[in-house]
Length: 137
Image 1 (cartoon, rainbow, N blue to C red):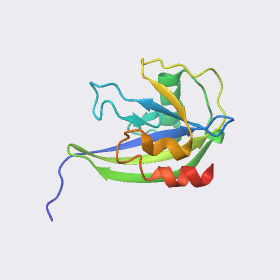
Image 2: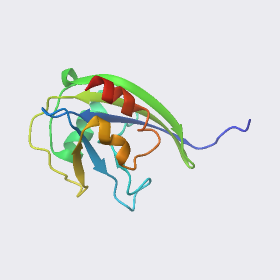
Image 3: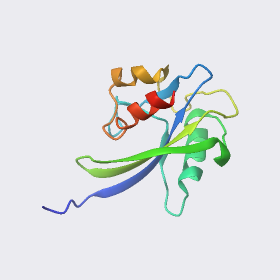
């Protein structure tokens, strides 16, 4: 088996859950990698950064909300090899944050019930979380 020689990315993402049991998903800009697909909000973990710190930072940068480590519950992780990179995706559940969610990067946002996640085109790394989120909620 050949060795895949491409970049490994570690990403922290959040299943932000509202009082009605819906999950926030965000549409990636068309010009970005995996553009046009829906995803759980979050972003890359930088060198020497803890996954929770990255997620708190990304949620503020992308959605203008603040949350804390104590509000992030690790749910699971997934791994997927894409053509140009490998992705280790760490998913946290978050039910508490401060502020009103606002798409600071102009991204489209939707609140969806867990049973409806499969109706949206999402990256392969996000798909393993669907059954877990349905069971949780």
